[in-house]
Length: 246
Image 1 (cartoon, rainbow, N blue to C red):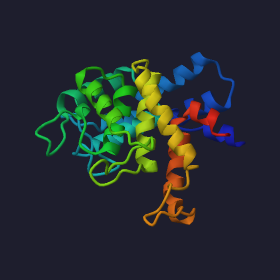
Image 2 (image 1 turned 180 degrees about the vertical axis):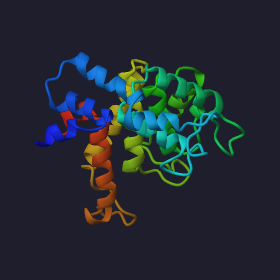
Image 3 (image 1 turned 120 degrees about the horizontal axis):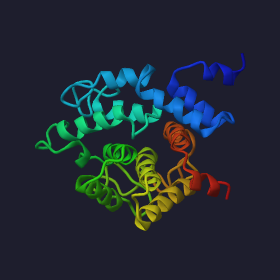
């Protein structure tokens, strides 16, 4: 058994993406495999664990990895069809019942305070085709958080004027997802290009300067670089890849 055969002998969430990326499988067959994510395997299991209040893991953002936010991010990565009956029912429960703890009952898709978290919320809103003023206002808020260097930082603007790799990638994922869902205007595309240029200028592995004004070496930011590369690959930022060879 070669690697492709081994991957195809897997959960529907893996199988349909392998078919799309590594084989010449007809589109209708791929779509049929993707539809199974909502009814079989890991995707169906995660959907079944949602509470009647719309939450997973008894929390909106915490405990990490099993909370509502992270479970929805995982469902997106598994490729749950946003138009499937299972996805629509789950999103309706989130929209109607999930709020941010400590924010006076603010709805989930209205976002939190922190830039990185709001990038996650926005990518989910765009992917699962959530519409309304809350999502549009959060999108405008994210655009307003872009820093002069072109990126984003979860501590800006109060504590830092320099962008961070991870927060920038989270913002770019959200903006790209809005473009894919055909609900984004030219301002979104322009902001994404600026964010991509920030990553290119830093070559994905260094900040512009350290606190003393000297260029930071590779070793000092190795972990952020690994995170940035991993997330950029996952997001499939195609315009970014086209320009990255300059």
